[in-house]
Structures are given as C-alpha cells and as structure tokens.
Length: 333
Ligand SMILES: Nc1nc2c(c(=O)[nH]1)N[C@H]1C(S)=C(S)[C@@H](COP(=O)(O)O)O[C@H]1N2
Ligand SMILES: [Mo]
Image 1 (cartoon, rainbow, N blue to C red):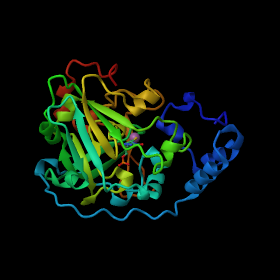
Image 2 (cartoon, rainbow, N blue to C red):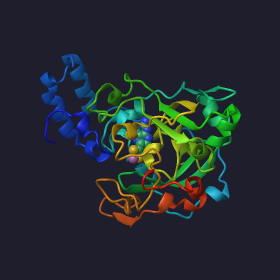
Image 3 (cartoon, helix red, strand yellow):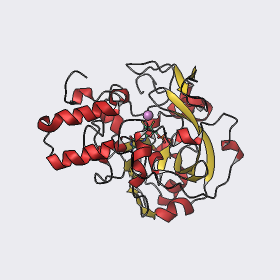
C-alpha cells in the first residue's frame, strides 16, 4: 500500500481489498487526522473491528424442500463450515472470515422484498412469504468467484422465473435490477470506506430479462437444509451458477424490472475488470490474473489446494450458451 489513504484508484479488484485485519487497523489507527471521523465514531469502528466476539448467528431453521433429480449432482460438496465461514460480504468486512464473525447481528426478520418497476402486478413479500410462497428445491450448483476459487454448494430456493411470472413483466421490461438492504447502522462496511472496501452502497446487481428467466437462476433462501445464515445473504439472495459469484447479490430488498441496463456494484467500481455479464470463461482472463484454472475448496485442509480447470459458463454451457448466441464474449465479459 503506497499511500495511507485509499483513493478511487485503489478500487480496482476484489483482491486489492483482501487486506489483513492488522493492516486495516493500522490504517484506522493512523487515520485520526487524515479522516474526518469524530473520535467517538472512530472508537466505535475500532471496537467493532477488533470484535469477532459478537455472538454468531443462531443456526438457520430447517426448511422443507424437494430434491428434483435434475438439480442434484455427483460432484463432491464443499463442506458446510467452509460454505458458511469463507465468504465475501463486504458490508461486514473484507476478510473471508469477517462475514461469519460480524453478520450475526443483521436483522433479517421482519423483512420486506419489493418487486416492481415494469410489471403489471407489483408485489411485496414479507419474511414468511420468502420461504412459503413458492415450493423450495435443493439445487447443487458449482459456484465460481471471480477471484479464482470455487465451491460446490447445496442451495435451497425457488427459480426467479416463478416470481417474475407472478408480477407479469410488461413488454418494456428488458432487465432486472436487484438491491441489497441499505442499513449502515447494521453494516459497518456501508458506514466506512475502509471497512467496506471503497465500494458504493447499497450493493446493486442486474441481469438481462432472459437471464433472469432462465430455469437455472435461483432466488436462494437456504443452504445445507437450513435457512441461509446472514453471512450467506439471509434472508434471500440471488444465485446465477454460470456467472462469477459477485452477480449473486445478498440480502435483497428490491427487485425492479427496467427498460435500461441497471448499474452493478463491481462494474461501477472497475468497469475494465468486472463486466455486466460476468459469465465464467476460462478464455477471458481478468486483467490481473488468469481465469484458466480455479482453486476448488473441498474437504481438505489449507495445504490441500486442488487446482482444476475453469469450465466455460462454469460447466453450464449446454444450458445457457444459447442466451449469448452472436455475442462476442471477449468484448461482453
Ligand atoms: N451485498 C453483497 N452481495 C454479495 C457480495 C457482497 O460483498 N455484498 N459479494 C459477492 C461475491 S464477490 C461473492 S463471491 C458471493 C459470495 O457468496 P457466499 O459468501 O455465499 O459464498 O457473494 C456476492 N454477493
Ligand atoms: Mo466473488
């Protein structure tokens, strides 16, 4: 880190923000004059960040769900403790361990999810409706982060197209825009640039309507048989298995059908590095690292690093390649 202050120029990649906790503390420590934080606010942040003594979220309640054969898999699963303890959720800090340590206090019930915009029948769903309005299915999906690690995860949820059918998109609806809850009181990363990695909040994402309607696209309310823990995006998050993980926006409060392509958080932060489509593609490298292979996070210990080839569309090419017929995937990354 050359300068003591993060600037816009530092907002270039997820890996840039993988600062060690002590580096961030150091930055907070030296920032008393550099930053315009009131002394009490800074003390609050320091005590928050030293935390990891906050109570962990209570385990999610067991869900009722089916296991449709077409969505199960013979792939080895990433163990539950890794799925729920190795996370990206910058609203709660930049370290992979931060979300599990810090998201437990996020209040996810009551919750309101609003679906509106270019629709004939806008809808709001409360917390109970999220798991009761549509039958839940377990779907075992590969999950590939743009940082070149991957997991195989047994998600539980319902296909987004069922919800979209209910609200009846108008003929002007071309895209679907998603938004994470904005609650700086509960999310230290939204309150402070250092903790939140310099992203702008609330986190937003978007899909083309045909991508949103695809049978693989899931609104996810659970994992490993139980309601999602907060660090994985409770009470409801998006899962688009053929795209990089950052498209999978967490803790959604708004779904809006739009005419124009909606803004996306990582694309806004670094448009040359994170495209709107973000389809997993071994042939289109990130400007600063190769996407040809990935580190699979399985049941082994830290030394058991399994490198495997990245698959086009993350292994779902036979199901989704037709969505991109005639599109130059190198230009539209
Ligand atoms: N609101 C919000 N959603 C988010 C993120 C985030 O920082 N904030 N991180 C994204 C990234 S980069 C990844 S890889 C996945 C990680 O999901 P997981 O922690 O459940 O594996 O969430 C995505 N959704
Ligand atoms: Mo990611």
